[in-house]
Each structure stands twice: as structure tokens, then as C-alpha cells.
Image (cartoon, rainbow, N blue to C red; front, side, top):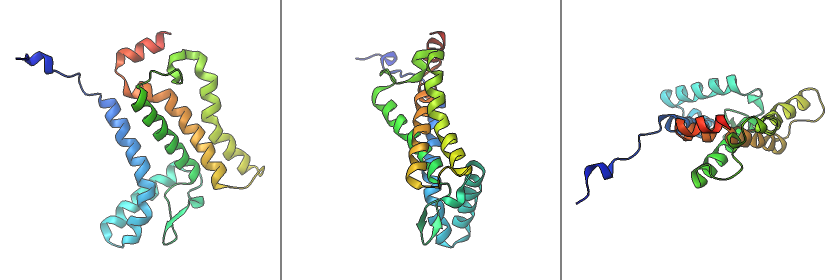
Amino acid sequence: MATLSAHITRPLNWRGIVADSVLVAMLSGPLAAPFLYAWGWFAPRTVSGIIYTMGSFVCPQPAMAVPLYDNYLMAVCMRCYGTVLGLLLTRLWYAYDAGSSRAWLPRYGLRALPIFALMIFTYAAEFAGQVVGLWRFDNTVTTIAGLITGIGLGLMFHPMLQQHNDWLRAAVRR
């Protein structure tokens, strides 16, 4: 007969659970907003209004969003949503390998900072180039720029969010 202590599992990683919940909200909210608004009832329209308001605070160009339903726009532009998709891709990758591959940036300590900076500033560089008139807004380009930024953010922060503190301390010491 197995003892009770053999069935004790490790404690919940609340930091990871909260991070995953926020990621689900960031993935579903911008997509749900136009459908909730088109529904026409007070409660869904109120929720949609909250999502659109949040999107207007985080997205520099919400008016450039893609129309999803009945010409109602997604709550953020594709640059912002591409960033969220990059975070999703790295989260799925982390779920697959639990941070064991060489790609995760915290493994390299401060040496990873230039790579991280190049990846996360892709969003800003693309946006700045568009603002100063070097090129026009293009959903494909903005999505790719956001995707690169999201992957950079995910490669840096998913290991810290999903692991327990002892792994984080070991990564900082390197």
C-alpha cells in the first residue's frame, strides 16, 4: 500500500497560472470584442466596450485593426496581436520542452540582452518607420514585427513565469 507522502505533489505555481490566464485573456479579448458588440445586448456590449477601452490604451493604432464581424474591428491592430501570438507560440514551446532547449534567453544571463533587445525593439522599429513615413501600414509586416517581439518576450520571460523560484535564482547566477 502506497503511503500518503508518495502522493504529495509539488505546490501550484500561481505565477504561471496567472500568466497563462492573462495570456488567454489577451488572445481571446481582441477577437471577442466585435462579436460581443454586434450581439446587441447591454451586458455583451458593456464587456465589449471594456475590451475596446483596454485595447485603446495598449495599442498605438487600434483604428488599423482588422474587421472581424459586420465591419466591427478587432480591439487591437495586428502588430499588437502578433505580439500576443508570439507569446502564445513560446508558451506552447515551453509547455513542450519545459525550458530545456538552448533557446531560452535566461540561460545566458546578461549575454542574452542584445538578442532580447533586438527582438523586442522590432515592434518599435517597425512602428517608428511607419510613423515617419518610410513605409505604409501593412498587416503582414506589422504582424511579423509583433510576432518577433512576442517571441523575444516569451523566450525571456516564460521560463521565469513558469518555473519555481529556485530555477530563477540559478539562471540569475549564471
